[in-house]
Image (cartoon, rainbow, N blue to C red; front, side):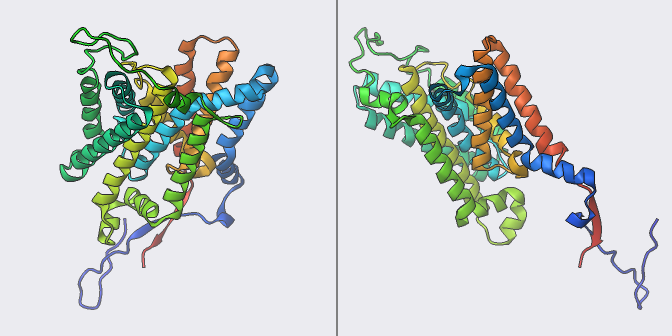
Length: 362
């Protein structure tokens, strides 16, 4: 029990507010120092150890062909994870990102197969539709005040249904029969297919795109005023608003960027499978969320960031490629992804807790 303090007029003086502060480095115990090191470097160490283990037990794992194939496989997940990173930076999460990638697959296929357009036109259409979906999400979240999870979850179901209506629930492929009985006049152009199958020197083109987008995302979030303000919005939107930040604008911008990245990932995906598969993107949501959450634990960042997301996608790629080479069936992959995510959450939310001390606010 604390006694009330009175001033000279006999009135009760306000009690000082207590501010929670992290203990300085000089007060850290040896155990806390170990925990701090594990939080900062543990996930990187896990990634390196897994790579060394698979390389030592499966010689084919460490070959250049295998490594490039692994990075190529992880590229779509990484790009979608980078898109998810933007919405997580502002304190949200886009549950429609997987269905948006699936929509991109269908739109690209329809543009080329149904309307006999070239790959460039298909890419512009897909990105344009992605930006439009992002604007709709931003409108629902910012202006209609719908919680982001509910708004994007509803959008996910809308997109999943809308993308099936024009094709009667069928996958789009060259030579398919249309509703009127005619044969689709177009096909996937060879130039468009290079989006996934092409190379820049020895490096697959999807890997180049992934690295470029990661670099752009890192620069935008860490080295520009817009990115720093987006972090401020995610940390404390009310404080950001009182500081004059246009909170609604930056939240909306984050969802537009998320949708744009989802469209790019969808373009690579449809180039990879060579048809408008109606099931494309169905598992992309969980993978994007997983790698973005994994990224928060890298180097003890404690927040969504581009390089962390990229490392998360790389770790998932290492685990899945290694398990495949060791002969594990495909149904072990979801368990592996879940375990990776659990480890990341342990690093981010459990071991990163430090002892704090309370001091009066001035």
